[in-house]
Length: 128
Image (cartoon, rainbow, N blue to C red):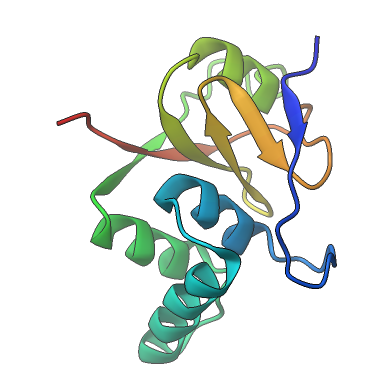
Protein backbone atom coordinates (compact mmCIF):
# COMPACT_ATOMS: atom_id res chain seq x y z
CA UNK A 1 0.00 0.00 0.00
CA UNK A 2 1.43 3.34 -1.04
CA UNK A 3 1.74 6.02 1.59
CA UNK A 4 2.13 8.65 -1.12
CA UNK A 5 0.07 11.82 -0.77
CA UNK A 6 -0.14 14.02 -3.87
CA UNK A 7 1.30 17.40 -2.90
CA UNK A 8 2.24 20.23 -5.24
CA UNK A 9 1.97 23.68 -3.72
CA UNK A 10 3.84 25.45 -6.52
CA UNK A 11 1.86 28.70 -6.97
CA UNK A 12 1.62 28.12 -10.73
CA UNK A 13 0.90 24.42 -10.37
CA UNK A 14 4.16 23.57 -12.10
CA UNK A 15 6.22 20.47 -11.42
CA UNK A 16 9.56 22.07 -12.17
CA UNK A 17 12.27 20.48 -10.06
CA UNK A 18 11.26 22.34 -6.92
CA UNK A 19 11.33 19.28 -4.68
CA UNK A 20 13.52 21.00 -2.09
CA UNK A 21 11.03 23.86 -1.84
CA UNK A 22 8.07 21.48 -1.49
CA UNK A 23 9.86 19.40 1.14
CA UNK A 24 10.76 22.47 3.19
CA UNK A 25 7.20 23.77 3.12
CA UNK A 26 6.03 20.57 4.80
CA UNK A 27 8.99 20.29 7.21
CA UNK A 28 8.99 23.94 8.28
CA UNK A 29 5.28 24.71 7.97
CA UNK A 30 5.82 27.64 5.60
CA UNK A 31 4.39 28.49 2.20
CA UNK A 32 6.17 27.88 -1.12
CA UNK A 33 7.32 31.49 -1.43
CA UNK A 34 8.95 31.56 2.02
CA UNK A 35 10.71 28.22 1.45
CA UNK A 36 11.95 29.55 -1.91
CA UNK A 37 13.24 32.72 -0.22
CA UNK A 38 15.07 30.77 2.50
CA UNK A 39 16.74 28.47 0.00
CA UNK A 40 17.63 31.24 -2.44
CA UNK A 41 19.09 33.44 0.32
CA UNK A 42 21.28 30.64 1.61
CA UNK A 43 22.23 29.59 -1.92
CA UNK A 44 23.31 33.15 -2.71
CA UNK A 45 25.33 33.43 0.50
CA UNK A 46 26.97 30.06 -0.11
CA UNK A 47 27.48 30.59 -3.88
CA UNK A 48 25.73 27.28 -4.52
CA UNK A 49 22.51 26.04 -6.09
CA UNK A 50 19.20 26.01 -4.19
CA UNK A 51 18.82 22.27 -4.71
CA UNK A 52 22.27 21.34 -3.39
CA UNK A 53 22.50 19.20 -0.29
CA UNK A 54 24.62 21.82 1.45
CA UNK A 55 22.05 24.58 0.93
CA UNK A 56 19.08 22.40 1.93
CA UNK A 57 21.04 21.24 4.98
CA UNK A 58 21.89 24.80 5.98
CA UNK A 59 18.24 25.87 5.98
CA UNK A 60 17.13 22.79 7.91
CA UNK A 61 19.96 23.19 10.45
CA UNK A 62 18.86 26.81 11.02
CA UNK A 63 15.50 25.37 12.03
CA UNK A 64 16.82 22.73 14.42
CA UNK A 65 17.04 19.74 12.09
CA UNK A 66 19.85 17.20 12.15
CA UNK A 67 21.02 14.95 9.34
CA UNK A 68 21.47 11.17 9.61
CA UNK A 69 22.68 8.64 7.09
CA UNK A 70 20.57 5.58 6.32
CA UNK A 71 22.61 2.40 6.89
CA UNK A 72 23.79 0.70 3.74
CA UNK A 73 22.70 -2.77 4.90
CA UNK A 74 20.37 -3.23 1.92
CA UNK A 75 21.25 -0.47 -0.54
CA UNK A 76 18.76 -1.50 -3.22
CA UNK A 77 15.82 -2.77 -1.19
CA UNK A 78 15.08 -0.09 1.44
CA UNK A 79 12.76 2.50 -0.13
CA UNK A 80 11.15 5.78 0.87
CA UNK A 81 7.97 3.75 1.43
CA UNK A 82 9.90 1.58 3.90
CA UNK A 83 11.20 4.73 5.59
CA UNK A 84 7.64 6.05 5.87
CA UNK A 85 6.51 2.73 7.38
CA UNK A 86 9.37 2.89 9.89
CA UNK A 87 8.54 6.50 10.84
CA UNK A 88 4.78 6.72 11.46
CA UNK A 89 5.19 9.84 13.60
CA UNK A 90 7.16 13.01 13.09
CA UNK A 91 8.34 15.10 10.17
CA UNK A 92 11.39 14.21 8.09
CA UNK A 93 13.08 15.37 4.91
CA UNK A 94 14.42 12.34 3.05
CA UNK A 95 17.11 12.58 0.37
CA UNK A 96 18.00 10.15 -2.40
CA UNK A 97 20.99 12.04 -3.76
CA UNK A 98 18.95 13.53 -6.62
CA UNK A 99 15.59 14.13 -4.94
CA UNK A 100 14.26 15.26 -1.56
CA UNK A 101 10.83 14.60 -0.17
CA UNK A 102 8.96 15.26 3.06
CA UNK A 103 7.67 12.35 5.12
CA UNK A 104 5.19 13.47 7.73
CA UNK A 105 3.48 11.07 10.12
CA UNK A 106 4.22 8.15 7.80
CA UNK A 107 2.94 9.85 4.63
CA UNK A 108 5.13 10.77 1.64
CA UNK A 109 4.30 14.32 0.52
CA UNK A 110 5.38 14.73 -3.10
CA UNK A 111 4.14 15.81 -6.52
CA UNK A 112 4.84 12.31 -7.86
CA UNK A 113 4.98 8.87 -6.30
CA UNK A 114 8.59 8.68 -5.13
CA UNK A 115 7.86 5.84 -2.70
CA UNK A 116 10.05 3.38 -4.64
CA UNK A 117 13.13 5.64 -4.63
CA UNK A 118 16.12 4.60 -2.52
CA UNK A 119 16.89 7.02 0.34
CA UNK A 120 20.45 7.79 1.41
CA UNK A 121 19.93 10.22 4.29
CA UNK A 122 17.27 12.10 6.20
CA UNK A 123 16.88 15.22 8.29
CA UNK A 124 14.93 15.07 11.55
CA UNK A 125 14.16 17.31 14.46
CA UNK A 126 14.15 16.23 18.08
CA UNK A 127 10.90 16.73 19.93
CA UNK A 128 11.11 19.34 22.66
